[in-house]
Amino acid sequence: MVLPRVRTIELRRTYGFEEVAIVPGDVTTNPELSAPVLKIGPFQFTVPILASAMDAIVDPNFAGLMGKAGGLGVMNLEGVYTRYEDPTDALREVSEAPRETVTEVLQKVYSAPFKDHLVAQRVREIKETGAVCAVSVTPANTKKLAPVAVEAGADIIVVQSTVTTARHLSNSYTGLRFSALVADLGVPILVGNMVTTSAALELMEQGIDGVLVGVGPGAACTTRDVTGVGVPQVSATLECAAARDEYFASTGRYVTVITDGGIRTGGDFCKAIAAGADGVMIGTPFAQTYEAPGRGFNWGMASPHPALPRGTRINVGASASLEQVLFGPSQRTDGTHNLIGALKICMSMVGAQTIEEFHEKAELVVAPTIATEGKIYQRSGQI
Image (cartoon, rainbow, N blue to C red; front, side, top):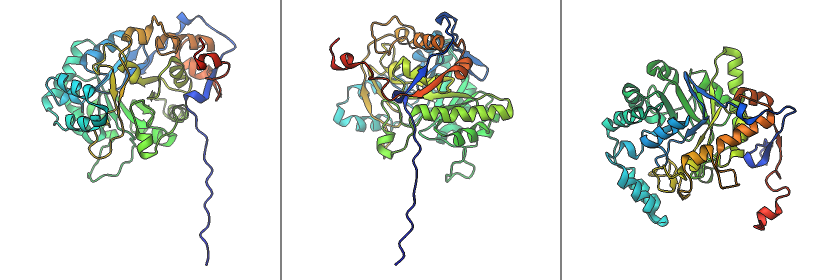
């Protein structure tokens, strides 16, 4: 009997935030000279942070607050805000559900159908705050919901699912063609999520304006547990930033890279930008703000899936204002507050005044003991 040939596979090493560190530069600058501006199409944001399209975080009011702070809040067009005229009871039901039955409650709450008129209404509510209006849709509902949102005044469309590619097989005859979507909508389009150079490059070639990087790193996401799929965020960001640089070199057109998920501290934020991101999308740190609608809870938008939930509700507590999380002042020493201050100081240590300079000057090194070296007293509680 001839035995089958054994296939040998060599696994490539990938890295997350806790495994790398940023090397300081030979030249330093004053932190106040740092200007970390994020560009998405014709829009510029002085805070290079997007608030995640999660119902516990971004409602029209929170989107307005993010806009006033200089960032961008992305509202989910397939959540409770387009299913209920007044989503207050739905949000309360989710936040108050016992842990043992919360998935069933989520599935029930999200079984209510979309109300088409609420799509346009929520967009108008965001626009009334004076903020740039960004809304999120899944690929399956993009052709239906995105035109309605743009007609109502949406400035940016985010097409987002756990994994999105330029080539997707489905039962639909035409499927979702991003090149056609770009031409039809006439507004900046961000697409996510992805973790590889090849997938990012193929999507960039469709004419989109930005990509979201990350599969499963969010605190409320269980995709990695349920499906086993995911790549640590530093490596994923490096991959997609390489696609951006290759695409820019060949076309002269710059596509924004946003690291989405897994960012809890200022250090994580800085490492994402050092790895090549132009900005980040953050969820749970904003769910912990007093202004968030989730009442100190957060849950992923795949949590209510009727057959295979890939998220869970987590109790994060409301412990700070949005102002404190973004700009301080902070009474905490764990890096969870004053994210913009942390980025500006990090940029100054590298000697960069812009994000573009930071990409050029920042060096990342593999440093698996960076969080524990010399920290015995902090970790033993003897402080």
